[in-house]
Length: 317
Image 1 (spheres, one colour):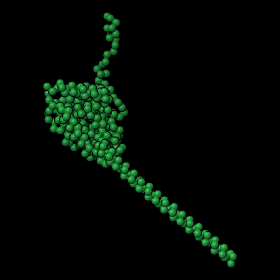
Image 2 (cartoon, one colour):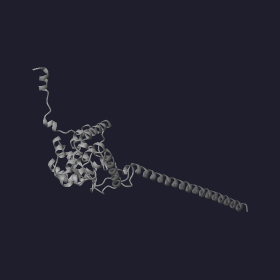
Image 3 (spheres, helix red, strand yellow):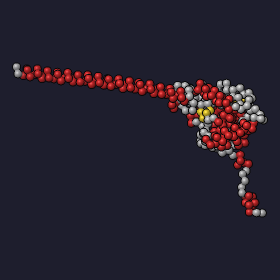
Image 4 (cartoon, one colour):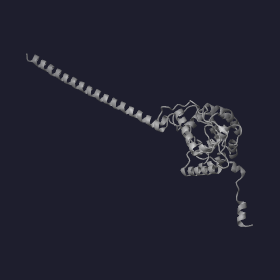
């Protein structure tokens, strides 16, 4: 036996148990969630009381089946940001919280269980509910290295199972379209996914374009966000859907950055105008007070002079 063969036999091999362990990327304390969303999850009675009783993976999956009806971080109508600016509003998830959704509570509950690779694949391939599968894809997006995302998602890019991620409905899409959106877009309703480094993002876009070229002659992937009908994946159609998605977010969660900054500037201008007006008023009041004080001083001086004159006159009479 050669030395190389002897070395290969002695070298420890990765066991199936080690391969099943799923490492966590990023901030292990926060799961890379927005701090406001995480604080609302940890402070909600649903998470602290009800989900605390669920101890196993299968119990949490059953809870997803019965309780999750959308994939937004906030329940519909519970978070009002219209008219708020700066650190108090916007679509970035910064500002006053609302009622955090059961979807994000259960997503964080899955994280506390530290899922294995086999369990995550079980979520992605679950046949009972598209929301179970969607939370599996979101779990990957929040916890796995950006360089591994495409390998996780590639088998599901053309999945035509329908799901409605919007609170209140009205935004039906497919699992394939949802996965594509997670690969190319950071915004997720009123929060953000973890940022993907630019070089890796370019690689993902190249791989996605190559996948689309290979799939066109074989299959027409379902990529229509609104109706779920099968049609060729179309970048122009995706851009239109992005704009529609952003318009709906603006309507539900407030104006975009440009409008918010314009309103913020208008408010600052109004405050500056009021501040200048108050300063002018204070200056005028101060000047009037000085004038009155000066007049009173002159009057008292005249009175003292007249008093001294009378006293002198009486003295010499």
